[in-house]
Image (cartoon, rainbow, N blue to C red):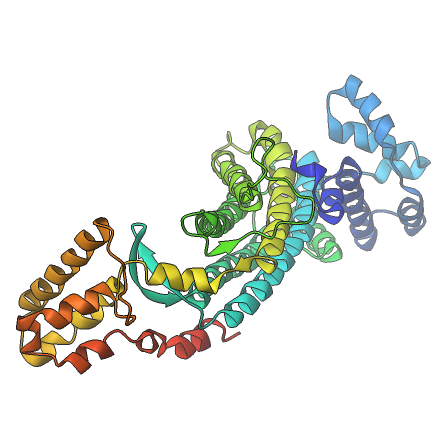
Length: 443
């Protein structure tokens, strides 16, 4: 279970003790609210605020009889008080307490997740600046395309993570709402002012309208946002797993002293962290569907959502927190191999420069179709030569593609040998890196 490795700070926010602490915080806020409105005498209010307690073990024993956790809780709290206990849970319903308390736990937990994301952004930005000009091959369909830099790859990750940060910051406002609206949400037994006082006391916003519960579209938005964040984190993890493949070997997870990769093969250094992150992200995404299904409840409410939320709320936050912490550490310690990136970039004998040549010929009056035919014809010769075992470069350092192009008499009618060679310069592909970085890292 991920809780075995979870950060203590996040795990504690979803402990049984934390849940009842939040319930008691709400109940005390309601007492304070009634006191401000003149219903509860100040001396009774003061006694409740000072003395109200609960005992988890006692709650569990009472619940065996009541089969109702909130009643078991209020009964335990009443045992810590005198006659003033009659004001505990006055004029409110179970979900007024539970959903408002949920908002407190969710708000605090989401703030931790936002901190995790911001820390991850710092790490990605640092690595992106470090490798802004580190050349590598860009791939589409898994096939070599054109030269890019590893900094651009990291820039994509940074920008995508930024999307999720903005979404979760907005969701923080959406989810930080409370309710004190009574059994059916009609506020028949408590004035609207009570709800406003309680929510202000707790640092929440009153839900504009509620029935017996806070509407679960808010929860579904939260869990969906975490699921989308997980999808982007898995994208990063999958890329790292590819980069560490033996045939690619452009980056590698840090392998610590004494670490073992295989019980049978002592040479193995496996991408276990990114594989673990991939699995965790799958779990986080799996909570999105039940969260969405919780939106449709019977009439003013049923409790089909309750059992689901006992799983998905703590697990989503604890797992996401752990996953983000692990991903941040992985990226901070990721080992990059620029020489292998350059070797792979040159692997296809200069074919990565094909579009550069394709764009020069129309300038000389050729149609796109004619230009494409000339370039592709020579590119196919390179593929065939590589399959026959020929070297990607000759002893002069000239790529196969360049060699074939220089021998193409039709091409020479339009481009000089010098003009052809100029199409094989890496600097051409770096000319806008600074401009891209300025847009991505403008925060």
